[in-house]
Length: 339
Image (cartoon, rainbow, N blue to C red; front, side, top):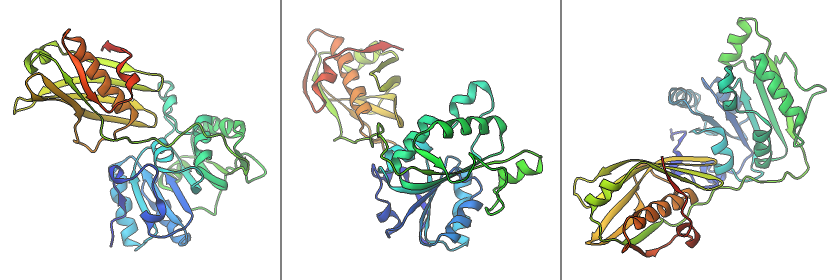
């Protein structure tokens, strides 16, 4: 049977889900499927829908794949991803018919509250990706998280309850998940939310990220690689929407290149990748993106290469840029700082 596992680095921004499932059908997503029981049951009950399960846990992904294959389901795919990346990068606006979020991690400690998935900002993003009238089901057994979810749902202008109340505390029509049953066995009250995306238009401040041609800068400097390596120290740079940290620097075994470990954070994408300072001939260097780890050439990567080029040029009065394929303004503003 064809593997149900999707490989993140092979997916386009956004994904053509019709091509992925090899058919046109409503897209239903379960965010955080855990053991996969609910996901399999959902796909069995909805054979005319394309069902996508999303999880961070690799063991959970493996278990779900085995369950899907045992059940011989052809309408299911599973993906390792966080929810925000899935929605903003992989899903086009108004492409999702239904979303299920079953017993998400409550992150109960005060210092962890910012890690909770469901808040007004998340619901706004979700609304931009769901079709008008699309269904949203949420379940939790954590009282404090239930209060936060209730407040977020009642505050959002983009969803409305399909019930007469914000939530109910009993739902005997659904398949119980592992964590749901644990909560019930331990005497906790479960909260079930059955909401729908409103028919009205939703403002969309969440553009699908863009990829660009592989960025590079060609420059001249009289410094050799030993001198460049000796001057290197950890650095960081940022603009309003992106943060770049230059971390460790390594020398290639062949001796004609330096590898800079780089971390780039730009919503909804975070990448740890390598930038390369490679000597083409004495005095001439190319700064480019290493292909290790299937990096995405985003605006953040452009910003990182521009910052590294500016730093290198700043080391010697004779250094100058010969050629590049970056937005010119990135090479004109110096915002690099020691880490």
